[in-house]
Image (cartoon, rainbow, N blue to C red; front, side, top):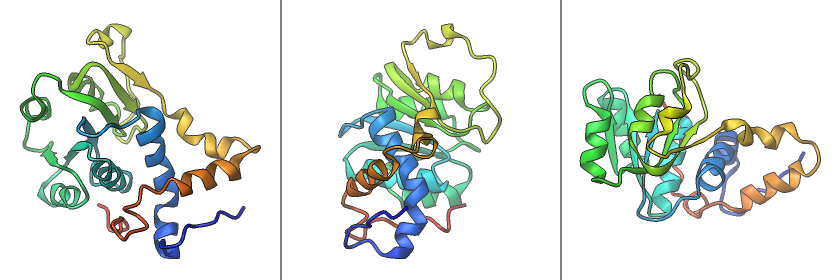
Length: 198
């Protein structure tokens, strides 16, 4: 399969961000349509997906609050578009999100960690906020009850993210369309290398 890469994006950048970029595109446009000025919580902000997500949200003037472990990872996330970074090793995530956002809290929470963070993600959401669970690096989400959504959050499931690879018809057209949706900062040199992600 061939996908035309827009002018201004070199082959190395395209190769480095293609798969992770498709995931971030799904997070920004399909799981929850990002609006400028809105707050979102992002776990694993210093991961490769996290670093791209921080940059993409910043390019849309949306505020990303990253969660990372340790000062080095926190600094890396801050360098990649996060307006605020919370060190989960030393800071209370919910208390800091409440302080940063005020009463509305976050419009969305992107959680690739799973078992150890999903309750924190829900606690950081505003009423009818969107909880996007798209990974389980700490293990699968367990002991979840519908009553846990009493605040009014909506939970998104990651299966949609991988429709690019599970379908045969129309796959090239969809991927090509995704590439054309480059948010601008990538082709203009604003997409920082994520190969050094911790």
